[in-house]
Image (cartoon, rainbow, N blue to C red; front, side, top):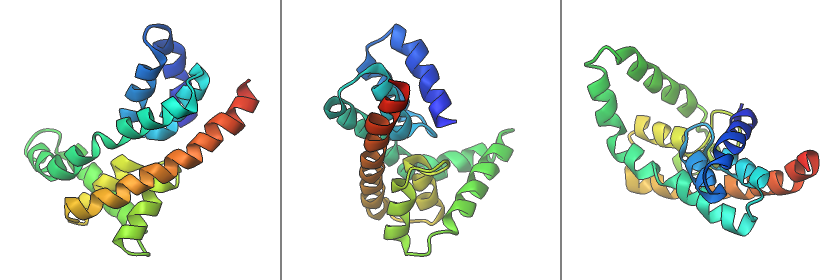
Length: 166
C-alpha cells in the first residue's frame, strides 16, 4: 500500500510542485511517513543527501503534537458522533502495544524503526500515549526509530527500487 500511495503522490503532485516539497508532504502523512517519502524521493530523482533530512523532518514534525495532544483529542472525540473512531484508535494502539516485550524504550525504538506496515512514528506515538509514557521519555526512541527506518528505507529506495524501476 505504501508503494502505491507513494507512486500516486510522485505521479500527481510531482508534476505540479517541487520534488522536495512532495517528499516533505508525503513524509508528514501517517502510513507513508519516511518510508513513502524516500520512495517518492527516489522516483522523483531527489538526491538521497537532500531527501533524508527532508524525510526525517517531515516524519518527526507531528510527533510532539501527537504525544502532547492525542489524549485530549481522543477524549473530545469520545463526546462527539466520532466516538467510534476514537475508540478504534485507542484499540489499535492497545493492540500494537502488547508486542513491547523488550521494554518501553527498545520496544518503541524497534517498533518505529523497522519499516513494516502499521509501524512508524505515528503509531509509535499512539502507543506511547496509550502506555502513558512521559513525552520526554517517548521522543528519544521515536526519533531514533525514525532514523533507523530512514537508513533502511534509503538503502531500499535508492539501491533496490532504483534498479527495479530504473
